[in-house]
Image (cartoon, rainbow over all chains, first blue to last red; front, side):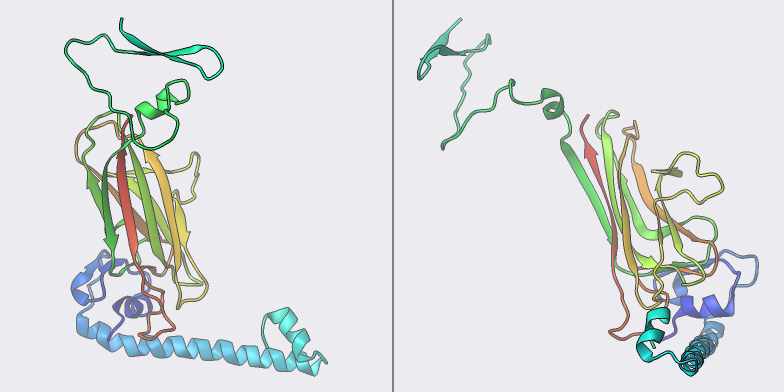
Length: 87
Length: 200
């Protein structure tokens, strides 16, 4: 099922709208730009999920890299956890 | 004057005096054992008022989302009450769940009577005047907030109380997290608003 609000957040940043419930019928478009169709949002949703997952993967990779660099400096796992919250 | 005089256990007396009324009255004593309260021990100013005259409540069980940077009505968090007296107060209790879209924005909330924001601070300056901001860093989760406010609408006309929300950027969510995957690691919840007419 398409998360319309999530899709809109990523596909139409800066646009203003309200969504009552989960369905496209509850979408009220407040911006002067054209209201996206339900199909456009259905198509946008997997792209938004992929973008979110890619962003999370980048953050995860950065964390792994940071931990590795700290370990290279001689910090053990407990010391790394103490400064970044988790290793 | 007609009275019944009771002698004290050790000294003194207590008179039970009938009121000066026309016709016959009946005063029935309660059953059981205890002590009768008298005006000497009751705050009559409080006892005379402060009674709940009516209660109206609504619970929102579905979701609402918005990217509006101006306050908009949160559908389903609106309730109408018609005070029976212009001197009555209205006690508003609202519980709202949701999230912003971390780390971009929180969901700002305000309480409105009709079209007028109430329960707002003095001198907010350019800050957003309201009663709370929904924001938790875990996008899968949400937060519960609310407000309790005693209002004096000074009317006997139907009066609407509602919750409005806005964001600074991105999106705000009611009754869900900002990510909403359909599994047990995510949350769906409910919000409500209740108003009570309190006698003066």
